Length: 116
Length: 117
Image (cartoon, rainbow over the protein chains, first blue to last red):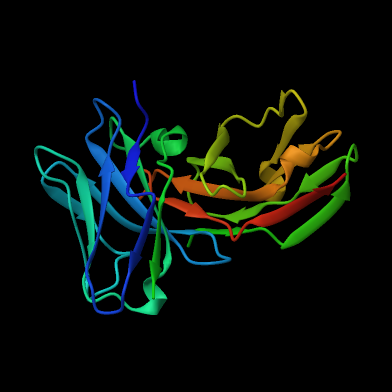
């Protein structure tokens, strides 16, 4: 049973381009969480999604960022018109049910976005 | 509001020394989870432990041990006989269940541990 898979592991984008980060949750998991780690900082919650639903996007920047988790396929975190300040590691976590502290063991390896 | 404080930004120890990483948390909930994660230089997050708020029993796993003190809202992590491979950033984290009912994990800023050979 593969863990949470994130790709790409490293992504380089020029300012103004779009970045698409993918997260495939563990098999049987229908809850996905995205976190961002800015350089030299801890992880910050961005968004929580269930299949086809955004439940909590309180940590998402208001502009340029969007997330989806379709019925089929991975969850996508999309950043439009990237700026240097978007350079960070983006982590995805998944769980099979809501609540209960279940995401603790199921973080992906992260995608490191570098904006040049 | 939830908050996790790791007052030690960086720690350096010589190999084989013991080291304790401090974690203090704030929450209004009576039901919550506490976690520790390790982030080695390669960047991935490695889960170390989860503790729920009703279980104050200390835990030992090999060279790792955790001291949960609800009275002082602390969840400290001790590495015994440190090794170079322990060099990493360590994050303490908190997840409340009461308000949101899902795993919105709040991370501390991390403590960077360097173990010198």
